[in-house]
Image (tube, rainbow, N blue to C red):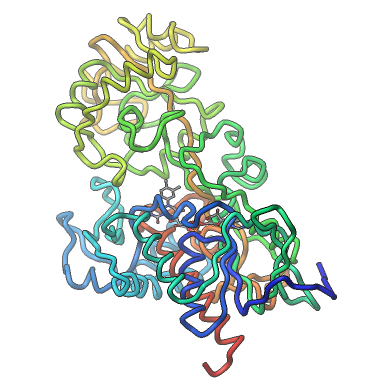
Length: 495
Ligand SMILES: Cc1cc2nc3c(=O)[nH]c(=O)nc-3n(C[C@H](O)[C@H](O)[C@H](O)COP(=O)(O)OP(=O)(O)OC[C@H]3O[C@@H](n4cnc5c(N)ncnc54)[C@H](O)[C@@H]3O)c2cc1C
């Protein structure tokens, strides 16, 4: 798109679209580097999905060095080289080495910058506490993502960044193949043309756009059946605008999906119970996986999203309810459900959900099978009998689930929890180089255009990488900064 004669309502050196983690890190770097900077944010406040992030990945950070060894016995803090290899291998070499190098070399600096802004890291560990493959990259800040976003917002304002909320960007303005600005709608819905020398797309990906999920993801069959467990508006606007401006995609379609009880939050104890490696059946009434996949939320998300209409029922009996309340969870889900956290609200939440028709209860397995909509009670009863037999023998011949997770479903009343695939974010789409410049079909950078955070491709294969927990947030901050530094060098050479 070429726009020869544009009257700009405002002009900046750098405009950042999206005020989440990547956008704010980019804006702060730009402003500190002497650029005039604006953030245009679609929602009525900044933060995006970054407010929900618990941990951020880094390699060879000062926090890792100070701690020397991680809390999980027999593990160590990974080197940058180990990180580089893990990203590359986990993605089956679909990752872009220039982007991976950017990640492992720049994430430690994020920790230093956050500390200089007053952020305190409580631990550096793994995500699931019981996941043997994870590297110890998960830096958990006090107050988690919400606090980090507040602190960054303050830093941006103090550095002189102009922030326009409720201002969705709609179109990139180009002249002679280079970016000259962006068109947005202001708070009142009026068109606003903002001129700039560099534009950073920090729009968080297309996770909340079922049309784009259906178009691009290998989990397209579930696109219409997902459940959005957090209120974000990441609808792929950056991708759409970049494609119009001549950008290309790269390895598009990986999603970060988590299992969440439909209509619930990730901290609900019903959702926490259903996310344990208990018996899961799909709408055919049969098991479909070793439920120990629950150890990795990303793999669980894939597993659930693959089921017909994304429907999965987690089946528990009253012994398991008692166990989860009194002894706590068998696996952790970050800070949403901590490892061995006692799910003290479980019985109350279950009773409420059953009353509201969101979960189902039966005094016998037959009664539960009849209560769950659309399930064949006879098939379901046979599944439970077969599963209980595996529990008794301590051997699961169908899926080889570890014996420690084989909890029988024997003592009534019995419950079915309605689990759904919840897309947290998409993992990349726009092809970038190691400086986060957006590239065209000929792999040439489009002058003045950058993509960062979840909008930029390069770290993933087909699945979010939980081997290096905190990857998305680590990338958001590092990529924002690196893009802004490149813009500074281009706009103010020699600075
Ligand atoms: C519940 C949850 C938990 C998570 N936990 C973790 C975790 O512990 N560790 C981790 O690494 N990752 C986690 N993530 C992933 C998280 O999304 C990334 O960590 C990262 O912070 C994303 O940053 P971002 O800047 O790319 O996107 P976001 O923070 O989502 O920011 C994108 C912003 O762009 C705005 N926007 C979109 N379109 C437009 C437009 N047209 N115009 C203007 N603004 C626009 C959005 O409103 C949003 O504010 C989690 C995600 C969720 C949803």
